[in-house]
Length: 389
Image 1 (cartoon, helix red, strand yellow):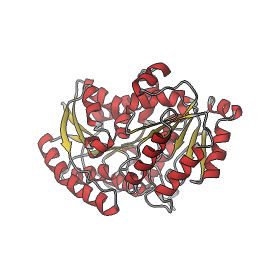
Image 2 (cartoon, rainbow, N blue to C red; image 1 turned 30 degrees about the horizontal axis):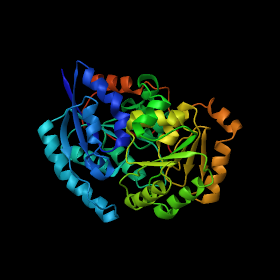
Image 3 (cartoon, rainbow, N blue to C red; image 1 turned 180 degrees about the vertical axis):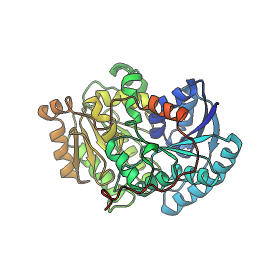
Image 4 (tube, rainbow, N blue to C red; image 1 turned 120 degrees about the horizontal axis):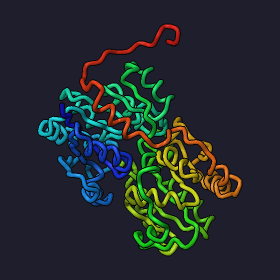
């Protein structure tokens, strides 16, 4: 029996991770793909990245307008409310047999809570993880409790989802979905990347993505300015700066990065979105990836490239030996850069082991979508008495 699978994407980042899964669902004879896009994808401010989804050969079956022009706490909460209204209409019209949701962002929570009320089974990707510096942490765990099937990225995360009361047979360790790009996606040459960006890459460069920290005491403007000040210590390195996401305080960072790039146009490029092909190509050629994006911990280590993870946003997440952690302070960031760019550390990165798998997650998820029960009936799983706290 054909199963209709809706996949939701709200940002450039989760779309990059979902790309091969969407392609594999699209190609499977027993599955029908329904694509739902919303939030940042539909915002000109963040690059109108829904167009990339279309350019990649997907039909968008529903667009969910939900992102208000405010990144305050109240603005985000209202965006979720607006989103729920549009999501309800879209899910009623599409009538999927299951909904795939990745991660932990507020638009994913809005999607999941609507599907739960409408009795649509939720397949949750990347559950069980911990990011102590963002309210995404609580949202991720909330989605876990709403979901019927879980595809996690590491054994530790599988155990954590089971610990939350989810039945072991419905919690599958498939590895990180983004690593499928390592074996399946062609990368651009340095010359082609430079031409695509209209930005010379004739010297070493650093790739920077910094998002606001939403629950910890790490003011986004001050922290990001510390990062920019640290980059000034490395004038011989070019810098590619991608925009932050739409979390609380994200818009306050954008004028800083635009001004920084305008002051040094030959050295610094500020860009709303690279798209996953250019992003992965840029990672492959970078001297280091800097910021606090989850990609720095999950995908970048597989390239043998150093990551400098700044501040509290990703605290608690598994990290390879190629990841250096530092405070959101000028001296700390500069010291980490000095270590990351040293020949010893760069050689160490080339031999690091990524704890998030080997890059075959998509096919495992598709197998689960065709064979696992897709229903909303589940009971709380209690750990055996011998392992219960």
